[in-house]
Amino acid sequence: MVEITRATLVKDLRLEWRSKDAINSMLFFALLVVVVFSFSFDPNAEESRQIAGGLVWVAFLFAAVVALNQTWAPELRNQVLDAYRVSPAPANSLFLAKAIGNFVFVSVLEALMTPLFVVFYQLRAVGPVWQLVPVAVLGTWALVVNGTFFAAVSIRTRSREIMLPLLLFPISIPAIIAMVNATTAILTGELSIRVWIVLLATYDVVFTIACLLFFEMVLHAE
Amino acid sequence: MKRIFTVFALLTGILLSYALYEALIVAPTEKTMGDVQRIFYYHVPSAWTAFLLFTTNFVASVVYLIRRSAAADALAVVSAEVGVVFCTVVLVTGPLWARPVWGIWWTWDVRLTSTLVLWLIYVSYLMLRRFSTSGETPVLAAALAIFGALDVPLVYFSIWIFRTQHPQPVIGGGGSIDPRMLHVLLINWAAFLGFALLICWSRYRLEVLKREVEEMQALTALLQPRSSR
Image (tube, rainbow over all chains, first blue to last red; front, side):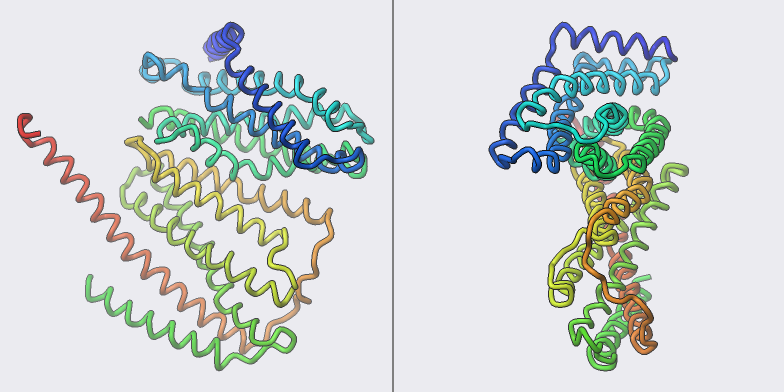
């Protein structure tokens, strides 16, 4: 199972490395969101600390959807997904490979976009900055694990590109609340983030298990 | 079956009228809020009915995944649809009451926000069912229903922490309810439950008929000679 996960993951990463389709469209999209937001709000340094947590994660959420929508597109061409379905390879290793791949893409996006946010919004965190790392890791996984799952659901629908956010956003609300509030708490340095970390971790565990339990069923629901 | 349905519809009609009379005439007027408080007799029963229907949807989805019975899936569709309608009633009557009493239409309070999120999840459930091109829509929908159910405690908990960190309007002193009011409330709930059951029943029959028609059409299309197609 690990072997197949690794093979699929390496294949996806290599595809992305050569084409850079997902990361380019995500980056440009996130950049546009940042620019549009800065026109809409025009905050001073103190205000940006208050709202940046929300802005950052909304930008990442929208950009992540761009990548998540492309998750299964390469497998639909030439009926690769059908080949997967009839092969004895476990469905969950395919799912894990796709989810980890998306996690890598969105993490790269976040790493590249965060400096831009800092520059555009004159951000200076009052709280401990290193705490952003666990928030980002847990938050990104929360988005991509369900995102990868619902992308597999939405390829079975008409107008599939629009269906993914419609399914993903309502379910992601607790994770979004936790990510935004934890980030704001770190930036303003006012409150502890422990409770949000616990919530994100719980969300990740619950939905990772749920995705692994149901993915095979969804994969075969043609 | 048809006769039972008619009798049941009549009974529900009578009960609903009686409940309306009780709520508008018999129930005592609330001391501070006045007549606007009477919306409570519609708001709360709708909420209870909606939550009951969403629970039914969850149970039906689980049963469908285990047994793969078409009846369970039909029940899941029906309860989600009717549940969204009742939940909409809750979300509309709430602000109507809140505006004169709290002075605001909406607050991001735990119960309000959780109900809104639940409504969003179930609307996305209905959209998935409508837009799906898969031959196994029920499987996808049931998976979403289970994800939604897993999400509910997390939603409630996250909003609860979120709100306890922020100032919020004071929500009525809580405390006890006049027994006469409780009586009217329960009558109204019974009437609303009867009404919901009635709608679900006829919607269920419609769903079963629709599936039969679809099956027949598929069958006739298959049986037709190739030239005439």
